[in-house]
Length: 357
Image 1 (spheres, rainbow, N blue to C red):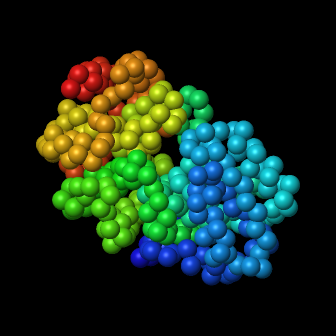
Image 2: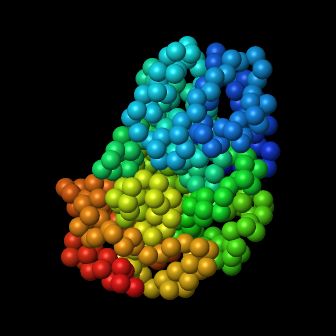
Image 3: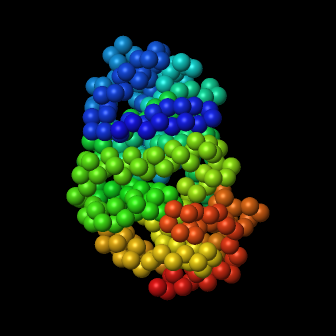
């Protein structure tokens, strides 16, 4: 499957299939790069780096840097280490960075590529389900202690090579985390996809290759349509943050890594559904949705040690906020998102009701 991404700054393709890694050599040879710089992490590197290397052009010098696994990589010290390594190894303006890993690696490598020598090419080679969302659209970033993804640039990749064979080594927790973003795409844009997911995904260990190609491809198509209209997140693109207002608050206040991104966002989506019911009259059966995701192993409860004021302060720092007033992506119906500022007393009451449920 090939999905075309068309933005104001760049047009490129996302290739999704078993064995897609074999397509990377042609993508690289077309540009005649001087060097390749692979940024991976300490989990993906030992497992899959040999597969990637075997499919790269022999004539192009390649260097590799491994960052820590997980959100620990998204900090200034690691970002600086990646830049220094690039300089030490002679990476120039005609080199190409390959982001080889999950969403965190893509964010870090993309930020390095977008800022090194004021921007050089990079390719995304995602190895997780979650990265079907983060690898597309050009958003790159690292974290601050007070907020997630607060420092970054928009920098589109040259291509995305999505080999679903890499997904077969994912632990169930990572499958669960990644599937949350597929569910997000269904909720904001495709009622039929949501029905398909709820009817067919009942066990995370039984998702077939064909199912992966369909649900990930459809998710990427949804994101591509939004990004093509709003590359720099000035309006429409904010709908892709459904569930992220509270989800990011949970991640940053609980400590990065305590919750996977998808698990935190899933809690945020359930909360946003309740806010949507109050603010927009959403009639969707939230209880049925919660029953389905609970069977898949999602925790739909708010962290016990996260009080409302902590959560609210984190939500005020969300990138969608204006004047320190949180704005939420809400649903008038499945597939009908709306960005809306919500009063603090409403946010608090629904938060407390949700926590007691």
